[in-house]
Amino acid sequence: MSADHEMYARWDASYVLGALTPGDRRAYEAHLEECERCRVSVAEFAPMPGLLARTRPEVDGWDDARAAGPPANLVDLVTERRLRRDRLLRKRAILGVSAVAAAVALAVAVPMALLGPSAPEPARTVAMTAVGDSTMAVTLELSPVAWGTRIGVTCDYPAGDTWSGENGPWAYSLVVTDEAGVTSQVSTWTAVPGRTIHLDAATSVSLDEIALIQVRSVGGEPILASSLTG
Ligand SMILES: [Zn+2]
Image (cartoon, rainbow, N blue to C red; front, side):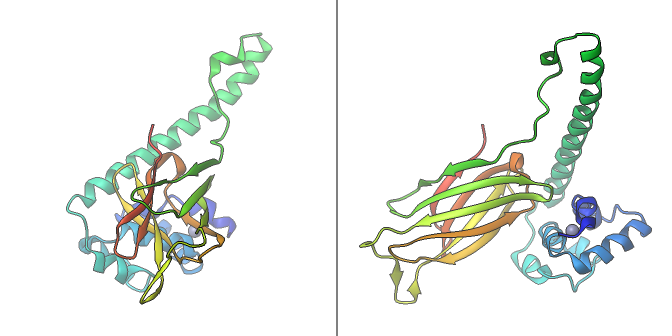
């Protein structure tokens, strides 16, 4: 990962909304040239035609995003997502201040417990639940990272069951829905009967903002699901 990515990872919505200064905008576009993750992130925010007109049409994923069409409430979704990010950043800034306060508190013997937790969010292991009668077993390993969430996927296809049709092995997709209801496909793969397979996926949505993860069939039917809220 480019060292610059840490700095630019949260500029995506500002860029799409045209909120960056001209200098920041040029710097971010230079970063986009070399950063796949930020291009994907920008494409996620990009479906709105009015915003597309102000952005660079050659960014990868643009056409797919445009073809999918914007949800009617996209401005609200983007704004809400931005607000939640800003709140999260403020929370982190306050925790940073707490660390300084902790040093002072130790010096005057005030109990540390009063200052609250400041540890980073740990990785989560999630066993997905079948929506229908599929015997496919999927476990997710969700790790919070600076740019979003890394998703390790382990899929088991018991031997003896049917895992293919006339078009070959059944194909699946992993779909992440954030707390604002924005859905993105983060991986696709095909079944391997009698085997356990591992694959790595990633999303720009932070772990604490993921509401739902689904495995879907090619036709979009949910096969397995995990709700992460609450
Ligand atoms: Zn980047």
